[in-house]
Length: 275
Image 1 (tube, rainbow, N blue to C red):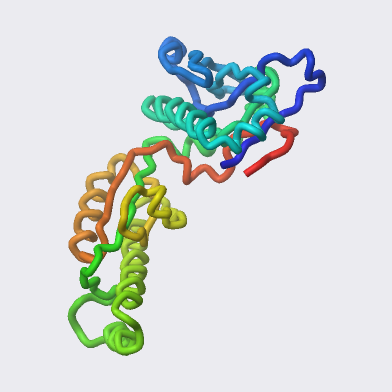
Image 2: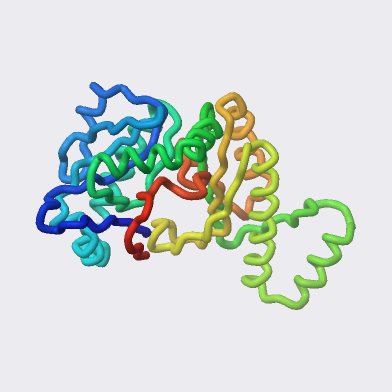
């Protein structure tokens, strides 16, 4: 995970910083009082340039640059911070489009947050416009052990694709063949879903320890879908699952559009970044 932290000019004077969760057009400020941010304290809003940043007050002895570098190596701390940050972003996404901030983006004060909004107003406004009326949906495809996966060209016919698969079948072991054809099926599923979605991204397949599923993952896709097109999209996921029985497709969402924000809001003149 990434982090960005500004360094205060006078570290002795800086007691608290400002953890940025995300940027929206507007927000119900009364509702923010019910949303817990970092350290369990309710989040709040910082407005500038026609935009609103939703932030947490963050003690710098825990969230400053040096403490963050140490804490990001602590998996338990990192999990708690990531869950809290995501919960705030998810709450904002239920109200409307949000540009999620990179995890652990910490400004020194509200003035720096406002300056960042002003400097990136055009970019952030364009991103919010692109996300309006749309949601991110995830589709994961897991290999079904022992299942016969049809080729991308289809189960019938004697075309070039079928002939190629037959030649490969003679060269590969059953396991290698299954993985190869499942990968091709995952490609076909992704292409088909992208025809309905506004945009699609393929992430690296998750390790079994992370996914919590014993079967290998062949597809880890994210899709930006218009609300009006969602029934068609979900129906397509179902039909693709039937068409490719060697893949078990799992639809999740809607999620905040993490996959479709090229560069999440961060401080102008930011300090170091770790990953």
